[in-house]
Length: 295
Image 1 (cartoon, rainbow, N blue to C red):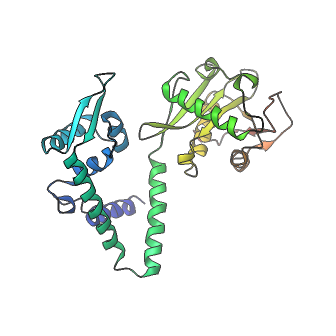
Image 2: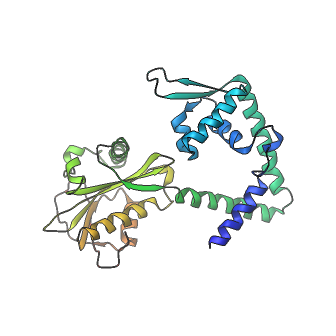
Image 3: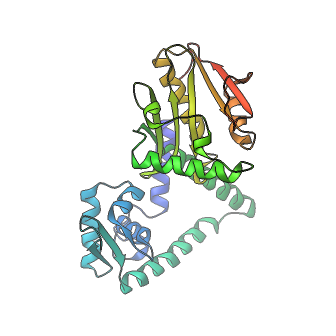
């Protein structure tokens, strides 16, 4: 498996021209061109650029200094906070980015031109699948305090989506409580999934010494749905519950969330009688964690 991945990587880097000092026949390497493209027309914060490209801060600074020396970008302090640095394309940078776009299109066409129509369809379909799977592999999951900015973003998006999807809307104050203290150790745990440093999902558990652990606040951004993020969050929360000594996990959910219901059923949860008075619940599920749950 490892050798197949490495062989694929070697072929791709050669085919896209990553090995050349001058990418797309321009006077700069691929890394500088990629940064130039990622900055985009409106510009962005340097820290956002670093997260998007997963680059070391020092290396990115060197790339930006080189682009700045070439007159393609400007790097300035933020208007409200001088600790924040903003990078924007100059007029020359916008022209260079447009030229890179045109030549990138030409490179893409050269990849499919020698192939038959059937081969083109197979290649493009495979590329789309590889892109999705590689994106899924880049999602990171870690424990966060519920008051952390990423956690608060996820909870806000979660409540907003429930309000949109539930008949009659959703009022967090009308639901059974899961306050911050319930979701931080030792009472519980809150996990956040991130992609390129941006929050894209969350989930929590509430521990109980005298009963099953509760699964709470499961949410995945629409941008990454279908990549298995929800299932990874679920498996890690189950694993943390096992580490805590819990043998049974419970949850309740709403019929307006059929994808969540399907995931729980396919993950070994069985529907049970209502075990609480959650007003927004239509389904109550339970799972015996046993000894085989993965962390």
